[in-house]
Length: 269
Image (cartoon, rainbow, N blue to C red; front, side, top):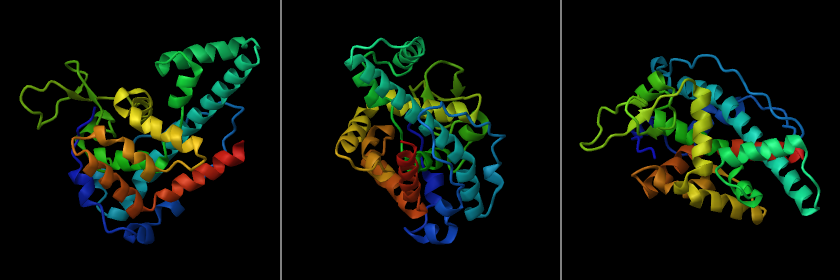
């Protein structure tokens, strides 16, 4: 589990409401079309990441960061939404005693392997979206708005660790007796994919998934501020980390991304 410090991101955190008013990131982000639950979404093909460390203007750096990552975040949420819809169809067919198509059986086996669960009911608790506001807040925090060494050299925007020699980048401040490295990814897309899979499968984040399921069952909207409560184990900071993520979301006005995502999801159904 990541234990990356978030001092770089802290330096860019201004009082609540100020950034939303000055930068208007939620308004500047390009709004996507409603995703279709019938067709698997097409993966974006992002170019090289901007040199975030060289962007001195704070508002420009933040906007570049959001513009670069948000399409990838939306894609992975659209993919999870599509996969979830397919699982619900599979569940309905089974309840009616109907045989699965070969395509449905193949997809089910793939999801069982990826999400490490066999029962459809268990899969539905894992194959679900993560609010864009929370993903952005963690990415900005763990990567110093894309400026950290791990982001620049290893495409690692979420501070994820690995435990084999040479699997990543050795932290300069690694404590004596520790053997972890910060995982190196071939692309930013791979980093985002691994982050989503980590939160959706790692036992450490069972609380987050339970909270998400309870929120759905009660008919409430999923928000990053709400789901941050399930991430106490993501950082040694614990509850302080949760408070910090919520401050990031609120001060940057990213909560509106969650509201617009819900509207798009409703429009696609």
